[in-house]
Length: 501
Image 1 (cartoon, helix red, strand yellow):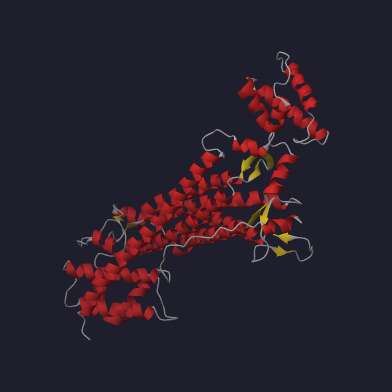
Image 2: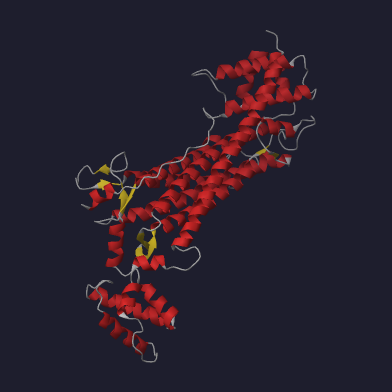
């Protein structure tokens, strides 16, 4: 009956619309094309490329790019495999575009641009999952549930407050992601291999055309140091998110071992599946998939550091676009699964309260109230509460029916054992019962950042603002990059228009 009741009480939290992203994804071939387009425009205007040859080279480049966009066409990923197509289309004079360039700075730029797009996808998925969690927290701001430490029921708490704790962790993940993005979002183009070039390249304009707001300042750093360091930082960001995800899933999974859980997944829609042998089982497939993806992300993320370890500067071991993008793509998939799981959660406030009232998660409050109102040393109050729990478990008593007379006797015994002056239990029976009420405990918290109504309102509003700021940041960054590439296309189009028909 409980499962049917839980299904009827399913919580729905829709996802907000995601900011627009590039479709199809911008791959190595795409960015090699953009670099060549920018080189043609800039070098022509800087008189580094003969203005008489430039339109013909532009026409050949345009033909290569259009051919690569056809279904099933070759889309080379390396400078040395892209260039032969350009020579075939425009003649060997097309290699004049290569003035002051190397595959080192070109591919470093390509990698940075691709990882930049993947990081924005991850940021948007993180924002979406966080938004879902905030909506659930608002829905369950007054839902009182057990919280667990060391795998054991510890204290009563608002489920909304619990979720906002996870939201705080995700907000730090988002902050780390933005910081890493800023360090990634710098253009290596124009640094060649180690120490630049004798060609007076306009690095700043190249960066602007490709949507980079800044340059990698040191030419040696560009391809030798930062190109290996950044993937390690990206892996660390993804790993941090995955650790938060795994912890959340494991906390929910604790309830799946219960005969009567207070939280589970809504059945159907791929959330659960029936055991092949045991008809009563509804295995939490979606949670299993989410946790598995989180573990995969942690493996890939840590792998970034392993591949970058003990190699000379500039080696390619840790630079693979495929490997580095896989970390971020995996983290994005994980967040998508986590978001689905959050939307599929079914919570029974009645069952949660029943579990709280069947155990002694409110026992610490006895010690707190005795100290706060009556000046009893905390350790004495703690010992008294522990004695009550021991008696209750030995006699199958619960907070709602614990004999008040026994509480009085245990209090007087505790004072003797702790060498305190004899005195009666200062709490009336009504106060004793009220102190053990989980709902009252949560409502009456006074700590800043606690689950009491005023603090929940403050933190929920702050979380909404954080989610909105994340959405605005992703939209702004994507818009800035897209505007830069649109500007490049427009200027390249002007050069292309000069080509003979």
